[in-house]
Amino acid sequence: MNNADTGIEALDRSYALPARYYAGHTALALEQRAVFARSWQLVAHQGQLAEPGDHVVGQVAEVPVLLVRGHDGVLRAFPNVCRHRAGPLALCDGKGIRALHCKYHGWTYTLEGQLRSAPEMQDACDFRVEDIRLPPLRVHEWQGLVFVALDAETPPFDEVYGGIVERIAPIDLSAMRYLRRDTYDIACNWKVYVDNFLEGYHLPHVHPGLSKVLDYRAYDTELFAWHSLQSSPLRNSSTLYGDGQAFYYFVYPNVMLNILPGRLQTNRILPLGPDRCRIVFDYHYTQDETAQTRIEADQAFSDEVQREDIAICEAVQRGLSSGRYVPGRLCPKRESGVWHFQNLLRAAYAGAAGDPA
Ligand code: FES
Ligand SMILES: [Fe+2]
Image (cartoon, rainbow, N blue to C red; front, side):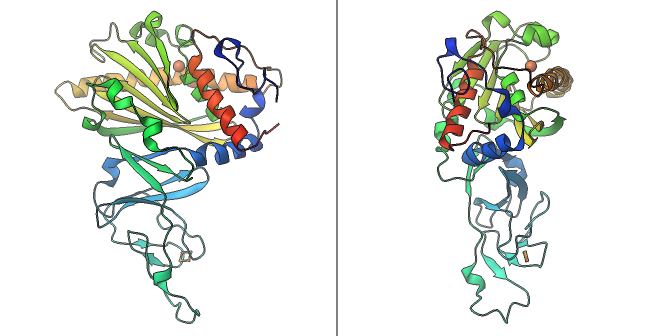
């Protein structure tokens, strides 16, 4: 490593992350291990898991996971991996099941993870269903959202998300209700999308419409231990969002919370391969008499901004993959969020003693 390359530098001396982190399976495998397996991953919202037997299937790093609310009302997370021969306990999200039936050979577990029956196993010596349980994973519910962490070393949830609720008051995320999901598959490394989210530097050049609504001069970035916040007063948008502030949170490593008065948009960036990622937007709104008009206008507008970001991110990926990019200097005034994210990554890579070069 050298400092202009992967070392941690002061903001006003910093360089962008080298291109090799944005390509190839070695870099992504390192990130699955050092980043995704060691962080809180947003996997569901509470509306999907309100009653006993409600369940959600997902994936964290390379582990299929299953979230299920027990008969005792407790929300649990398990690897979605049967203790027999690794079959799936659920194939899709659902409501109100009474037990977990493995889809391969029918072993059945309680919603609390205890094996209850295993067909035709009577000849297996010393085999007792009561000895077999699904191993629980860490799960955390916050403001209507549900998170899972695979690794015991993942920082406590409150260390990562602490301070957000207080900062955005009187906006109350827990009062918002899930309305819909939009998914986009994009031909870029997941970090290209995150880097792009983390700076308003591109706003005047990429988003002419959004620039009219946000006040670029007042656009501000604040850094915290595990998250950063970009905020801007809203202007000329009384029909769209009303007056107030826009809060754009990034929470390491791949969650965005885009908060406007009356609206939360969560955004997860999921790697599909070294140069492909999936963006999953969930929209949550407060309900009032203006909701329907606001919701329609908001979605049309968000889609326009999204298409502008996708086009530039895919072009940047081609640049990173060209073999012609050497890390450039970051803009201290406008790219502190990128610097913060890339330094968290550098620390994670170093902690995993890995360099994909
Ligand atoms: S793998 Fe689950 S019952 Fe066989
Ligand atoms: Fe953008």
